[in-house]
Length: 124
Image (cartoon, rainbow, N blue to C red; front, side, top):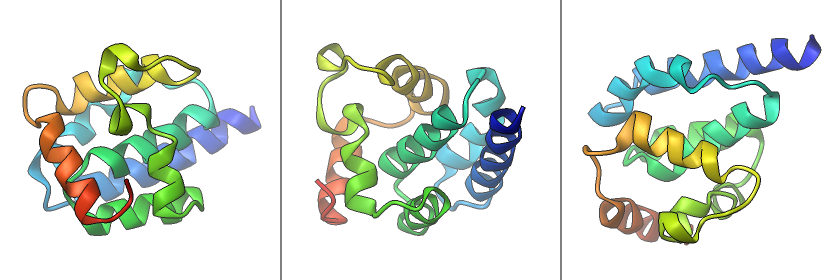
């Protein structure tokens, strides 16, 4: 029960921040977060990591790192899709990352643009 409460709390913080983002793709994607059917607080934390990795909004990325209490570099290192092609991604959160990418960003953001932003932020 406590895990569900924490998941709801962190998800609300993430969605509220996404809605205010000047990154229009991320702001529009906020409406799709509920469709991800997150079940644990750990998945909520990973959602924040993915948003930080995939958004072009530097302020939002910093806010995500504050929400989960991780440095931007550490946070991005946990997102496989930020570092590898989708077919190379395996692990505990690989499926979740792909659902987040497809539900919130696919067709509206190129991986190359995400890589450029992460390089500019000096987190990869």
